[in-house]
Length: 484
Ligand code: NAD
Ligand code: UGA
Image (tube, rainbow, N blue to C red):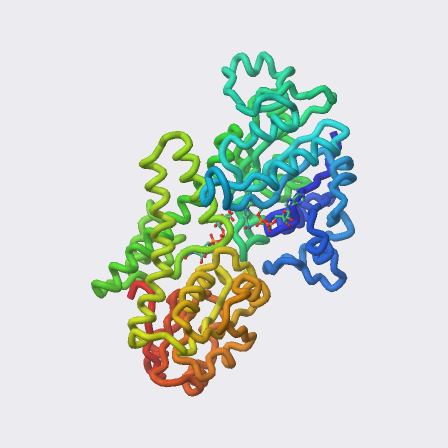
């Protein structure tokens, strides 16, 4: 078995993860492949115009690209060269057929499994890096090794005794007539966008789930070695947690669902604060001071966005329903319902504050990315709010430091929307500024200048509670916040 690594999928997860793996393992060659030639060309661009914006990413890519990190569309030869294969392809919510709107669409993932099987010419460890429904490894194993894909649980004693005959967790024979053995592991990724490089360099934990067989345990050790880094200089061993495959797959969905649930819980309380005179930032600060609760993910705002929270919670709902756990499914559905409601509430409050008519008014939207420090706009609350405002015939001027290109693509076809790099230009002659993303640039703007350029009465709706409301009021603004 060689030490080379290939990752299939060069997106938000494949690119940064493999760049850091290459940096921390200079003695291994790392290949990142994609079917999207444009994306690979951007990863390879001479001026480092990478396909995604992530603080610190360019520096890591500069350090390792061409040395031990290679981006390529040639999946076939990369699979042949590498005995460790990470799969980081997209797993969006399925929008058709059975499970539409909730289940994961596994077509890209399955196509990858078939590609690996077609190209492999020796034993391989296949690592699920994408977020997948629990028990997907059994299906992957069935495609790679043959078998039913049921992944039936085999009693531990029997499994250990038969481990030579078992390649992995499923019922495959591990050879499928080709003489090639594939061992499937789950290594979900916990990085957050905007802090991806920091999260990868010093993660809270790394999770590796593997089958409890001789080959499974050996494969888990191989992947532990990658994360330990050359000379043990990367992740401390105690932070590398190992579990069975199903626990690893489910933990990823569970962790995202718990984080999303906290955001929905605090937003549910925010409405009550607005109705009663309590202040959500004070309530969150004091709640979070209890170490059992903790202070993270208690920031009220426009609701969560990003490519994963919604799809992973929906996937959990679908899994619960599939296993007949209807009350649990309903519970997790509530997290999404609350999130959608938060964005509708923003538009309702704006409507009311602007004298129950928004038609033809100009609103400057500050921030379109789903959070600061990323250009990613997938499931951004700003997109949802922009569509609702568009229905009200608002003239919307949207500004964002990194997300204008993605935003334009998302809202293509909607009339009455302009895009401005410069926030001062966006705010000129506007009736209101609606702050949707907490970019650190925004509190530092000259708000007196903005006030002077706006129509009066000038309103600021700060959905992230990141501006100095007192100072804005002194200037003359009417101010709305979330949870106050
Ligand atoms: P993405 O869409 O940015 O990237 C996926 C890439 O896979 C695309 O470039 C696509 O062209 C490529 N691809 C699809 N099918 C392929 C095939 N058959 N062969 C080669 N390439 C193929 O998605 P992402 O944000 O990187 O997410 C990928 C997975 O990682 C998802 O399951 C997601 O839930 C999970 N994840 C993402 C994050 C994040 O921060 N974005 C964090 C943790 C986990
Ligand atoms: C999230 C998780 O934090 C990662 O651990 C996980 O790997 C990733 O999803 C994934 O699976 O894709 P990410 O979506 O990149 O990461 O960003 P977060 O920082 O979690 O923010 C998600 C959303 O929640 C953002 O819209 C953010 O503004 C919002 N949020 C977050 C709040 O409204 N309040 C908070 O207190 C925290």
